[in-house]
Length: 205
Image (cartoon, rainbow, N blue to C red):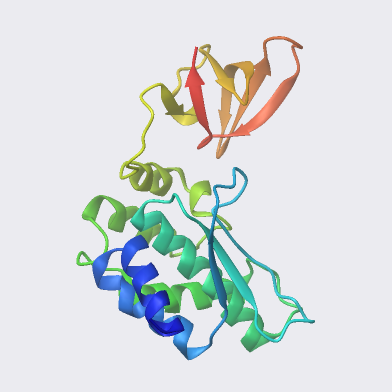
């Protein structure tokens, strides 16, 4: 199988059926190195423009569900295309990236690609897309609903009741106030207060 065929097969495996060809065509139009990587806690995908590289590189975590993988892929391709078109002095998530992201995702905003419960918050999200789809709590919850490897004792911090104790990366916290996309929490052991993302996956204690 040639390089093109391998990429198309990879897309068929990782994104919704009716979007695989489109994803492959985006790569074919302006090629880049594309790697499906191990799980990374801090990011779903990655793109950094390297001046010293002729061919740029995009990476996406291997364990994302099909809908999250697709949104992340288009998000990263939009970075690549925006830098190619507007140069390197633009803000990573500025107006140029937002416009590019909207253009690239718009052909996919239909029910043959996304189920309705994702499509509604996704369309709302795309009016003014954020640096991460995870920063949009409604969209993040809708997408996570389709995770195949959901753990029964894991919840989103947003769904934990204030006053409840939870565990994150082996440390215990008590939930206090929610401030837009972040939650003020107190670490039980030290008494220190931290702002933690509302869509962080935590373990109920």
